Length: 149
Length: 420
Ligand SMILES: Cc1ncc(COP(=O)(O)O)c(C=O)c1O
Image (cartoon, rainbow over all chains, first blue to last red; front, side):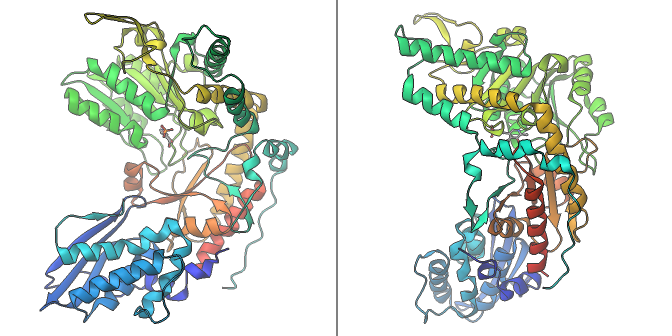
């Protein structure tokens, strides 16, 4: 049985109500759009990458608590990471919200771990990963909007 | 987190009618828990649950007389054909069609509308117009857009007001000599609005247009008489009427159906096939190519028998009492905004909650055992009109109780608390 607070932890609610890194990014050189057609969520992600390092990450859009908090926490976590590190983090995060047995305690997740509760809610995994799929699109910069469907 | 939970108002006693407890016994699926809470199923506009009578009618067909219809001389085939055609008569009586030939079995409302758009649509030309409304389900928008692309016809959209009612003045203004077809829902799945379809049909007919009524939501909540309405086409799905998925009905006036080309080609829809010339079967078989959903048709017949036994007037009165109660109580919840406040409404309570995304409302309610729909309800233009990306929607059926509504209201208050 899953509990409400396993999913909606205080930290998630805080990031939903006051998202970090929310708004346009001047001088961005990477950009991607993400959509979840199921619920109409839309997210636009901008990065400033200098010498392979993500210096700034900001997002805009409208989404549910899970997708907004995930984008907020993700943009916090990206700053100062190389592109390769960011991609590696995507894989770790994806495992966090989808794998049956969870992750080793020493997985380098920091505050992102607060989203582990999503694992118990298969219908909400797409909400948590929308920002991350948009990140991959921005890093690969193929210009195609990503969709969770 | 210790907000005082307002005491729920005294519930009207019509709501605790002893019949409802009896009706609930007919739906085995309701006797379960979800996340440890008794299931409160309020997603009936998406699909209703099925009574035992329907489940058993389908099972009996497969267990006792499964055979193809209209093509066997053997006993089982005859039994299957008899049951299949008996269901057609049941549907005819249910919507009071003049003739059984006017009842065409299809997969659902969506296929019924596509059939009309494809077949009737062949007579449309550049300069012709199709009129729909802003509150239509995507399945009563997209087939017409496709038809407009093919034919060069133009799609016109009659707007709604901020209560979610159709603007009759605009509807009348948009009708004209170029209007060939009007397609309108009888009951909006996103708003609960009941349209004055009889009046709309009169206006459309005066302009010389043919009318299709989308009855997907209406048939389970309002008695429908296609002759009294004067509707040229009427479409509905079995699964929103306590019947199986994958089966639905297109009603069409016989003269219209006669004048239309076939929709799909194949077995059953032909009279004679040679490589130089094929002649088509009579109505309704001309529009029923291939082996049909026999079990679905039989299940639909059983669903209509069930609804008739309970009685649509009793169902409608019960649901209206639930809706009135839910509406009055929901209005007391801070930050709750009702989407759809038409004067004539049925069975649907759609809302947004300030500071809580509908998707989160849906998850929190689910954890309380309450099943609602969160999303755009296949009516993105309606969402755009109200400036929301999505809504949460509770929709009622005959087996819902006042207790279900009270649980819903408690769960909504809980969602408010989580997001403080
Ligand atoms: C008003 C309305 N029209 C059409 C449809 C489409 O019905 P179906 O998916 O059964 O074809 C629905 C179902 O969601 C509906 O609510």
